[in-house]
Length: 201
Image (cartoon, rainbow, N blue to C red):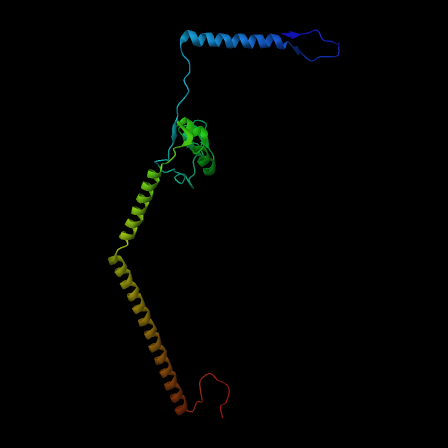
């Protein structure tokens, strides 16, 4: 293994016999191959599904703003951060959690490869038709009755606004009339006006 005899007495580094270790590695590989042949088990290549979109909503807000006491006996799933039950790991923030669930390791644990199924022309046309129908349904939902209701509400608001304006004008007119009566009363009594120290000629 390690040869203690060095070329010089000052050389304290260990010397390794490379040929001996190479022979040991070859022998170990040969034994492993023989064992596999005897057992008849050769590991078949793993066939993974193509990448699919998620059919669930990722929950990022349920623990937002909550305080949790963590002890030594707290299970990993309840520790601070986002827990992935597929990979059995905790990720500390939402961005890294999204990176993790979209990543290669997580997808492999789900049994999927990172390859996406190529869509045919017919599939693309069908998807366009489905999206077009959804848009038409949204437009139908916004029907005539709702529009008329909104218009009536707007008209009522406009009428209420006009009434308020008219009331304000009436109040101002009444206030002006009151001031005129006060001026007449002051003139009769011999005052030229209230609150002014200037003399009018």
